[in-house]
Image (cartoon, rainbow, N blue to C red):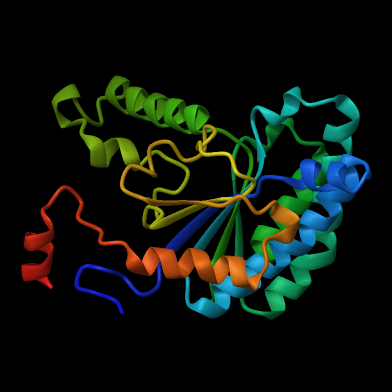
Amino acid sequence: MISSGQAPVPSHVCVIMDGNGRWAKKRLMPRSYGHRKGVEATRRCVEFFANAGVDHLTLFTFSSENWNRPDDEVSQLMDLFMQSLQRYSDELHEKGLRIRFIGDRARFAKKLQRQIELTEQKTADNPGMTLHIAANYGGHWDIVNAARELASRVLAGEINLEQIDAEQFAAGLSLADVPNPDLFIRTGGEQRISNFLLWQLAYTEFYFCDCLWPDFDYAEMQSALDEYRRRQRRYGKTSEQVEIAT
């Protein structure tokens, strides 16, 4: 039963897809095998939340800190990223999904940068759920970029210091044109946000599960939605205030 103040479907879901390497290790397989299996879970996730009526899904596919992993794993991840875009972008396009990328793409190979651009252009006018892919993304990077943009506007005389507020700052962030996430999901048993959407997660509902990402199936996804439905989102108000307002 959904009580007052609870949203039946989140508008924006964001996910840290954790556990590919550990999933493979448990099966005495290389980490690359786990990452390939993780792609299958990602496809399930996109399909599930699109069918659930979610407007925006943001997936943390590669963080700015992931460059610190062994060179061969990073290389394999880049190859898998490229292959997945080439293989699945047409499928997502046919389903009416819009695909956008957030993060510093300058460090990627030119061929991958071009594939990212082509995917965004191809799906730009689609009416369905928007899939935001966070690649070479970090919350600190996002916040610093927003601060630089504000500083440049002040130096240009467009605004003065007294005009700077949270709304002005947020306008410079990667997801400035979409609602902040309603539901944050992290698989793999870890309970931290790992430099993901630091500003945007201020009032997001968190859901952590022990399930490793390749095992994140429809039942696990439904459990996350069911848990979200049980939450009352108060945004600093009391439960009584929320009940009266609804």
